[in-house]
Length: 216
Length: 216
DNA sequence: AGTAAATGTATACCAGGTGCAGAAATACTC
DNA sequence: GAGTATTTCTGCACCTGGTATACATTTACT
Image 1 (cartoon, chains in turn purple, brown, orange, blue):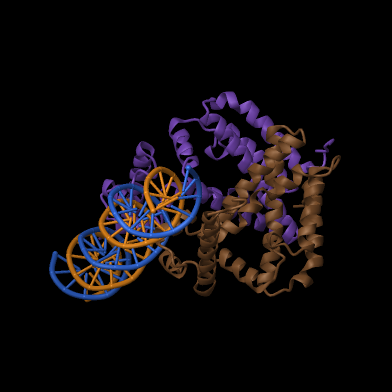
Image 2: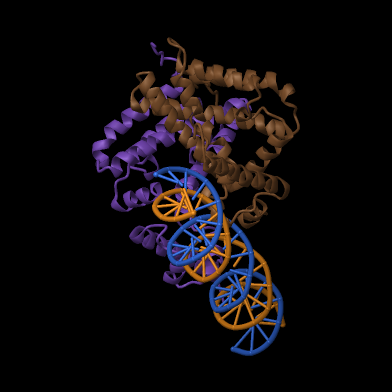
């Protein structure tokens, strides 16, 4: 057939539609009945696709859920790479996280749209999905370590140490917010506290734990 | 039968023996052929036990390997709880880690006994086992956060933030050591570097990442 | 010795995931 | 516009981790 610019291509478009159809069917069923209560066969049937085809698009059942978060794996690393000149990496990361809070970015745990809320709860209640999230965390650590090493002239070990600390802290903040929202607190009510906590956390990251001096 | 002090009990002893027999058979087979190349049925057969019994002792295949590391999950938390009076938690943890290096404690990644080395390599090469290790990490974070909150009069969020940073750093140090030893470096040769790296890491933890100021 | 409770076994079963051979759809060529 | 090569999809059989059930065996207690 005559095609002016063959960018999309029928095959490619169909692939994307199938991908979306499977993912949507999966999310719908999982949210309705729970991740472990729905089999991949049921998802395949709902998406009008064979089981074999489903696994051609998503290598594991968990990927049906977590593939949407794959982009975030390298997000912090990108923030460090794309930061303004003469800006400390940690400052760039802090500002990006605060902006995420303002935008109610789901990755900060501060989005209380019912769909997001239910999805978050489902993930947190499903061990195999939590494990996958931990995997993303590890990926984010690696990516950030590389970015720090390349753009901030940081020795390898120092870059790795800084990366694991930064990622761990962001994760902890997000989990705390998500837990509070899952408990029923509205995002707007939580926002000031989330900002204060984030600032506290990043200041701790900057100044270290040395101030925590005990008596006993 | 006449038993003076029924502490062990025949049943208990037999249980322990079976537990050990299964675990040993599993490790032996896994080290020889690889984790994914050996089925639980083969392990059960080698241990002269039914598959059902195996799963009565170990809830998942991965537990056959990682159950030995379960104790370490709360190790850092214990160190903080049992620290000497008027000692900062971080100082206690640092000294404990350095002692672990001196003792070639496998958890520091600085043990190069062939068995340990092969086991480490196998775990790192098996995604499902790595995922379980990440799970232990999360458990260690929770336990340490509790210990910090209870014994160091630290607010909840601060305790959690400090815990995730400390655990993440220890983990990174151990992984770095393990990687170098897996690459062929002897533990004794690595020891001075490991000590220096650990001190650098804990100092970073104490003083924060604020010194890492970029120019660009 | 005899009985209750715990433990082990055999069998069948479910679900996630893969290999394979062939059918169907798409892209390319004349 | 027909014909062919290449992907892609499908159905099927199969393997493995893990569980349910029902029954046999062993240990502990009196």
